[in-house]
Length: 258
Image (tube, rainbow, N blue to C red; front, side, top):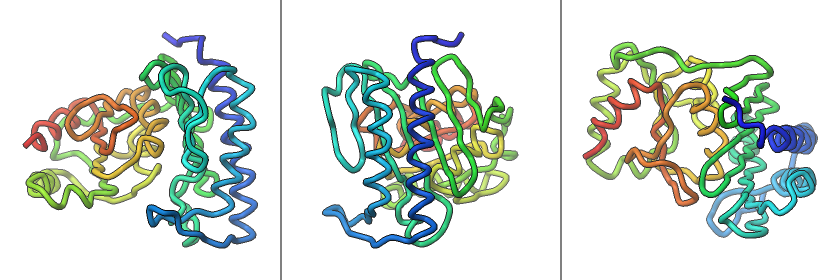
């Protein structure tokens, strides 16, 4: 059952994502200079202005809610209502002129993710979901595939550098050999595909909660399972992902739990 508490907040999140899209598309057409942050990742004026546009919409929409953004950090307390914002997830793609970047906006309430919007304006997709309200792609409801056998499963891996350094790498290799096919769509894209039935499992070992929070709500509301690689629920400290159809997620979790 849809929880009506989040209807207005979801509307605001979608409006904020649309405002960010205007900024991002402006700089996509114009081009930007790139700076390197202290963590060696790139940032542009598009990232910063998109987050400012998002904050301008979210702040008045839900008074008292804190906002934690990729570019401007935490404004408020983490423990109650908390917006999670990555204004331009995939800046490396953005600056290299590939369309695999997106705006990610989620709302967390007392540690639980309750809604999410994933907007990829150049790629041409916007997905959203709220607790109990289903998952939606540009106005049409979506669901994960019914895939239950690994031999029929399509897998996608994203950032897996950490995974290559331990015993799970061999387990992943065996998983790939037993699957139907392997891809590496990455970023928002493979989660969108999972939620609408185009993939059956996504594996990542090196992420940030701001990258994946909205996508977790979307995949879950589409009928999928979204945890970290240990099968644990997401938190602000989450750094890995195992997401899939219920049956395929369960099989992968058993095989990767070394």
